Image 1 (tube, rainbow, N blue to C red):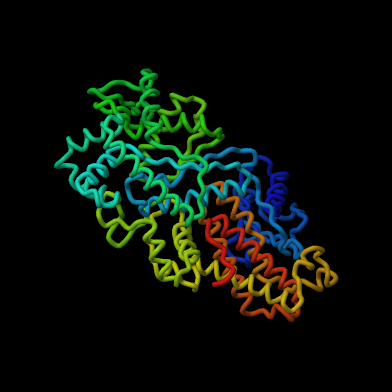
Image 2 (cartoon, rainbow, N blue to C red; image 1 turned 135 degrees about the vertical axis):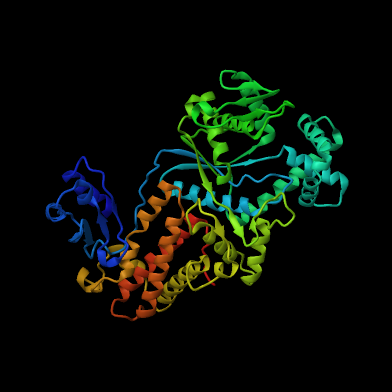
Length: 521
């Protein structure tokens, strides 16, 4: 990669300096730029004069920054090698985490889309990734749903939960007792309802995962992590202590706060279940890193749990990470599965599919783009009309650019032109100067940065770097396509090779985001 070559040249001159080599904001400032002279506090002209880098045609100083312009042959798009940042690493990515007996709401959809993209980015940069899904199949929410079902056997599980939740305060003792019964599995009729509801919920979730393109390797459940969590807490009195009938972890000494791990009824809280999850994850799947994709509202909770887990399992120190995402917001505020006005994940897909004239692949692409186009931690305002636009800044816009490139390549083959021939030797039409346009088209200067965008997205767990890059690439391709006569044009071979590279890059990039890649639209 040219960026690495530039970095190496600078490091030889400035071995003890931490600098950045990145893409400039504007094409007129070159293909790469560095702040090395600024941070080293030396004359940029003097530094630029010492740089002799193969593949760099021109070095230009602008203020304290040094800009690099690549040679024409380096701007000729070739198969780009993505830096293998995580080569040899085993990474478990946990995401989605819906609760059986409740709806698959928008928050689960957000977690799934982000988690799947992060998992694919890790894979693209060399990691062996195992996808994990942790589901709450026990807890008060289950008791609420089963209690609601008992009151109205004909209701759906989602309706039963909503009703049970609305009646919880007035039937708290009854529902809490039912919750204990569920944990103990001491009532045959309750067990039957539980088994039916759990199975139906999990089957429904699998249908949604299939639409979203996710296939999990590991499924973890609170029904198995709860007992394990209690056992772990009881075995470590040096970490946990009793308080008013409960067992707590006092995190203040670590700059955190106190949280209950076993409540006064002897039941495990979410915190204890997380400890059980940590142990079971290690037993079922070895990993160098365990990444949890979840909502930022539980970030403080996660810090306490992670600290407690590291005290119990010292080998996990620094290996339990989390990426916290924002909420998808509507004009009425954030959604909650505890309210009756929930917009479920599948209802959003179904509604957009209908608007997209039955094209589920377009609807899924529209949703995923909108959820991935901004930083992970930012809240999202979903605009259905904008999400399906073909005018730019949307999933369908990227899909349409891909379809256009594929159509052009099919047309070339119909008239007997095969761009792959030029790709194989790169010189079929003679010397490089004869087949490359002058000056080089901006599209080629965009293409060269794909691998950098993927590497940065994987390193920071921020898929939006790829989304932003692909949007720019699609715009550059569409602009070039509108102005260029490709088949039968002056640079036909190069134009078709360029189109083939755009098709390959868009296809690969959309795959990393989990966005479908249609043949026609």
